[in-house]
Length: 176
Image 1 (cartoon, rainbow, N blue to C red):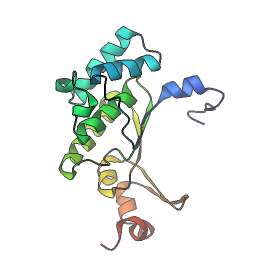
Image 2: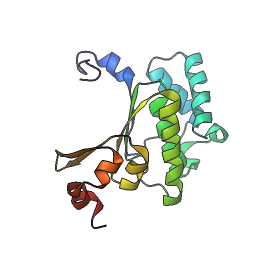
Image 3: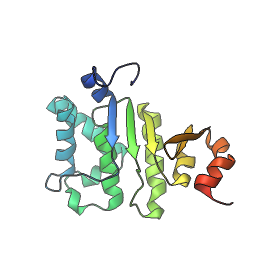
């Protein structure tokens, strides 16, 4: 269920409510970034004008406006991640699921992704559901954390509660 809607029976509604940024970067290398994002908007039922307007806003918010005519193959890993986030946001979902949003990014650029995600959350009012193994990223990004181990709920709570939970320390954080 998503917001009390059955994802199978109400597929079209729930699909529109959720954006996805998978761990694997899947960007068509032949389209420009703008073409790629406008096409993504059309996939979710946005008109060409709606899609273009939304893409222009997203490119600015995510610091990609100077890459509008670039092709994915010309972008760094960090820039590709930002485009993946824009793809997840283009149809104005209520929730975006981000699977390992900092995977493959130079460690010095990770804070930029974190800051942009915090900004997206605040400015667009979108819930972020982040799957991430980098606990530093989660501790900076999350308001509430759910830790799983072997498919079972290990702990849940605020970053402060989680970083002090012995089970989490043993499973994820190691000796301090």
